[in-house]
Length: 153
Image (cartoon, rainbow, N blue to C red; front, side, top):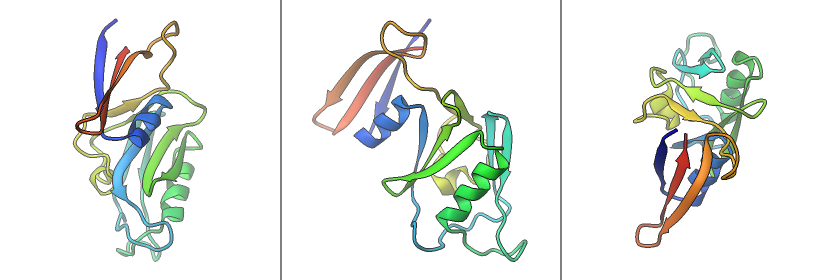
C-alpha cells in the first residue's frame, strides 16, 4: 500500500473527492445553453463507456443546456454515471457508488473542466480502519485556503 497526498482548493472539491465524485472546474449555467460540445467525447474507463455529445439539429454547433448534457451522459453510460450540478460545476459520480475513472483522452474534458489530469479516478474514501482508499489525515492550510488529504491507496 502507498500513501498519497492530494491538495484541494476548497471544501467543495474535497467533499466531492471523499464521496467518490469528480468535480469539473468550469462554470456551467443551469438556465441557458452555453456549451458547444457537438461531436466531443467523455471517455470513461470505469464504468466502460464513451459519451459522444450531439446537438439538435444533428451535427449543428448549437450549444447544449445543462439538462441536455446530463441526459446524454446518463443515457450513454447506461445509468453507470450520474451527472449533477454542484456550485455551478459538473459533478460526476458512479451509480451504484464505487470507482469512477474518466480517461484524459476525452475531447470534451477541457470544456467541462476535467483537463490537466491523467485519467481522473475517484472512489469513495473509507474510514481509517476500512479498505483502501482509506483516510489517514486531513490538514487545513489557512494561508492558502486549501486542504491536504493523506490517504492510503
